[in-house]
Image 1 (tube, rainbow, N blue to C red):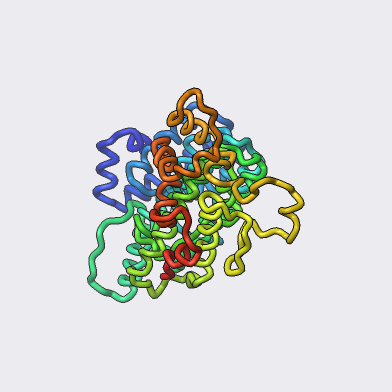
Image 2 (spheres, rainbow, N blue to C red):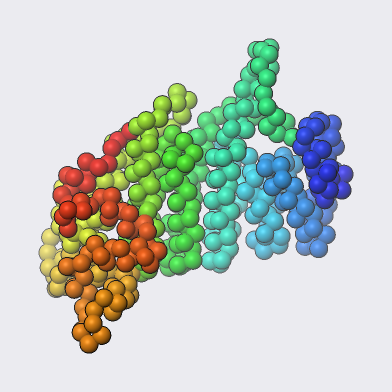
Length: 411
């Protein structure tokens, strides 16, 4: 049976014939090997070869092996986060959909414990793994679950409807709301990211992995037709605004823009009857509006600490606090030309467009903001350039808050 993991011909045969006897024999053999060679044995080269072959096998099938999931749920409680890491993480990305409480007990809770007691590099690898797991849920497992469930229901009703082959390992599934699992999974990773960034002092590499995850989350509706839009938590959004590098801020702007496009896409999509989620109401739009206004006010409009009673803002402080700081032009502190993340870009822009003998100062950019924005785009900060172009009127250097809010539409 082990030769089937290394032979492409046998892999094709197993996947095309979908013989339940062959699948059962293979599962029995694999369960015994994983238990003997890995679960109850120390790290070995043979164990690594077995997991490598199994990882390639699951990628070929584009599905998990049920006995492999059973093995993982046992092994993760004993795993030190180092042994066979690359292959364990690959196998995790093929995990099947379960109710979130089950998924949490089997997979997420052991990973959460490892996440918080490991170094930043393991945290980054795990976030990459969870991003791939989310993509697998959306692109593969949702359709597999729905097809398998319909097949079970039709068998009970003795109907003659035919179904395409969706899995080599046919197993019964319980009825639950898969989109609810996806939404709760995203919330779980969001909370884990927020705490992890605090532990690692907003490490730039980890922040990049967090942004990778939420770039996928923010594009689910537009790219895959997911019938809901989930924003990152406010803590993560404002970490992007106050970051000390321009790429982080730019990518967060891109995420907010993706969310806005997702809400607009929802308007033209039929709402499924069995969504099973709390309806996305106007509060979600208000949250996005508030974040967009904060980004526009601070980066472009020089109104960071100006009060607005309609939306809660990250810049709301008690009366007198800002004046007590005695910071000159405090509302410009987070503008594109004075923000700590963009001072290097501002200096490079001025040195490029000003005569060598002329002294330069970031305030000189205020008269050429659109030109500076194109310079940022040239420096690969596409997110912030597209964000400003979307939410700020080009005919004016500022935009009323009512116009910004009006550009956001509730589904």
